[in-house]
Image 1 (tube, rainbow, N blue to C red):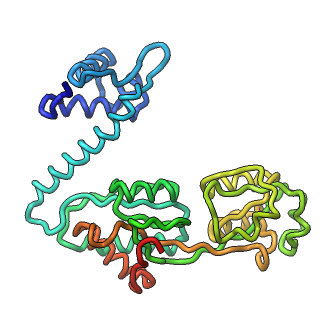
Image 2: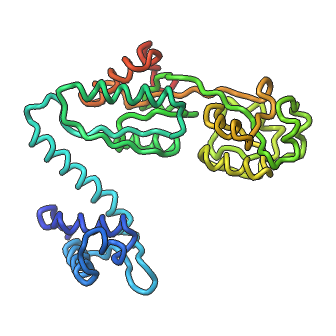
Image 3: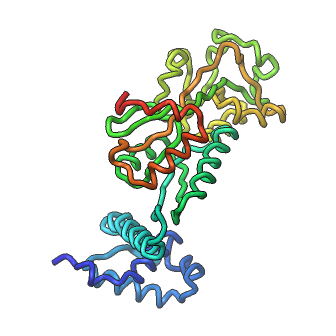
Length: 309
């Protein structure tokens, strides 16, 4: 028979999650300031109460079992829920109490990050006791977490518009093709035409980019990444050409490490959105933050796009 919630010791679950986050019992000793024999005993007690093994430990190293892999996110949600309950019970007099989980894709222009910061500052002026959790993930990961309810708001580039989510345009970002200082074409960068790049190796995104489809047939893609920093490393190697946000590449260009191939010709623009679940499914905390983000970001005030469009 499956164990009842009342049978589980929350302290042991917290110990288990600390061990997972540390990557093993030995590393968790420093985090928890507890000896390894004690941690091993506590972990064994939790496994006994659950009725299954959570992990393998020994000479082969620490590794979660399949059930341990499935138990871990459940345990995290439990601890997060209890934290929210504790916060709400402690701040019953406040109007907004709980957590707000926000997802970003990272490397946004300074001005856009400033506006998100302004929205947070405006929100903090409310009658609230809210814990902010901000994560940086890939676009597809953020959409999945929005659908599952793990995060409430995301800001980034999203190539697919899921029917259960609403998308509000925020700003457009220009992407330029770049080459590194060690690339044979670097000295001619700036005026190079697409037909002169035949045979060059390119780095490309691991996710679809509908806005850049015009370039795909002519590109010889030999490397794939899912973030700007990894793309920059490959372009800096001098062995790949690649597209980067103009604002992100600016410091590399100033240092003489990168140069745009031909900014007048080889560029495309991507639209960034603020995304959440449908408005009727949002709680008061999320609605309040979206209102504050709309005040900080003029484009967000013009209305949210219809789901799936």
